[in-house]
Amino acid sequence: MQPEFPRDLQPVRSDANAFGRTPATAGEALPLQQRVLRNTYLLLAISLIPTAIGAAVGTSMDWSFLQANRFVSVIVLLAVFYGLIFAIERNRNSGLGVGLLLGFTFLMGVWLGPLLQHVLHLGNGGQLVMMAAGGTAVVFFAMASIATTTKRDLSKLGQFLAVGGIVLMLAVLASLFFQSPAFILAILAAFILFSSLVILWQVHAIVQGGETNYISATLTLYIALYNLFTSLLQILGIFGGSNRN
Image 1 (cartoon, rainbow, N blue to C red):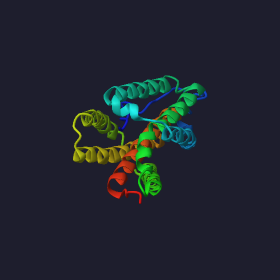
Image 2: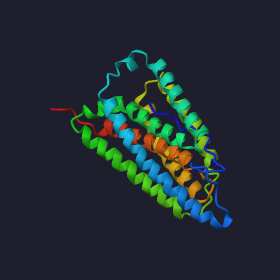
Image 3: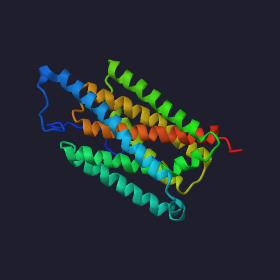
Image 4: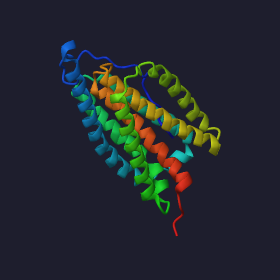
C-alpha cells in the first residue's frame, strides 16, 4: 500500500521559521534559502533514524490482521497518516512540529513491516533492500542537483503534481478491489515518476524562495522518498526476488 502525497503541492510560505524568526529581507534572501535547504537536509537525515527503528519494530510484528480486515485497516492507517500530516502542518512553526514529524517517521517505519517481511523472506531479500535504498539515494541526489542548478521555472509543476497525486490515490484505492499484477506494476512505476518530480519541485521551491519552512519541506521530501523506496523495493521483489534454497 502506497501513501499518497498529502498536501496540495503549493509552496508553503510561512512568516516565521521553526524557531519563530521572521524571514530575511530581500537583500538577505540567498542566506535564508541556504539555511532552509541546510535545515531541511539535516532534518531529513535525522528522520531516517526513527524510520529505521520503526522498520525494525514493524518487521517483528504479526501483520495477519491486515489480511483479515484489509479494507478497514487501510482506511484506519490513512486516517492516522493524514491526521499526523495535518498536525505537523499546524505546528510547522514550532519545535512541536519537529517532534510530530519524527513521530510520524517512526510510524511510517513501522508501516514498512509487511513489505520488509515479504522481501526479507526471499533468498536475496537483504540485497534487494540495499538496492532499493541505493536507487532511492541516486534518484534523490540527481533530482536535487537538477533542482539547484536549473534555470527553468518549475513552479507550474506543482499544479501537475496536485492532479497526479489525486489520480494516484484513486488508483491505489482501486487496486484494493482489482488485483491485477499489470495494474499494480503501473501504479508502482507511476509512484516512482511522481516521487522523483516531487523531489525536483520541492527542492527547487526552496532554492527559489517559494518554501521558507523546513519542517513542511522535510515532510514533503520524506514522503516522496518513502514512496520512491517502497515502489522500487516492490518492483525489485517482483522481478529480482529469488526463493530460499
